[in-house]
Image (cartoon, rainbow, N blue to C red):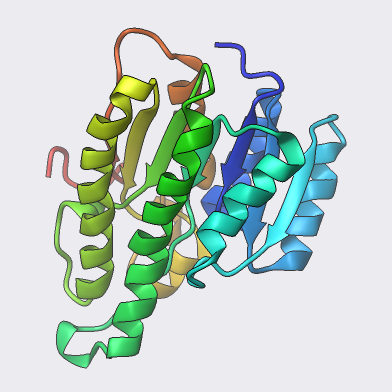
Length: 240
């Protein structure tokens, strides 16, 4: 599929997977709305991408704020008049036992990883259903299907993301909107390096590998649909 001129909204674009996604999608000819909390990093990314002629609009925002999902979609439509691809990539994690996790940490993690994507998806549907390549990609995690010690609240949030994605995919299928989830193991991001310092950084999945998979999903819009992709580190156990 030719995606030249299509519009993608990417959350958590100021680093890691989000930055890799922005570079990849712009390389496919897509115009972008990139959002995150770090204005300086977003501005650097915008300037670099625009060298290739891609249009990039920055929205500095905190998706844990209740009104932000609607504001992001409204601003995207105001700027470009359409939305074709939504990538819910922004994430938040802590490494604590269930016993030591506070209510505030529970609320923050569930808000960023589950509530915000839920309402971004909801607000995007009226516009995505008008697109010929309507796609939602929700970046989940291996902890969305497995449990790891000291990741109880993060696991809960990613299980929630996976759960509503399964329902969403069925509800929007008649509208021509495809929903994909990607569930990687440890990726070389600041978040993972902080929460999983036990992993050798040389063994981490690179953000560009995730971006390549998203690019494949978008380009290969044929009769076969991939609902979910599980990605493990090369040294981890196969089919675990």
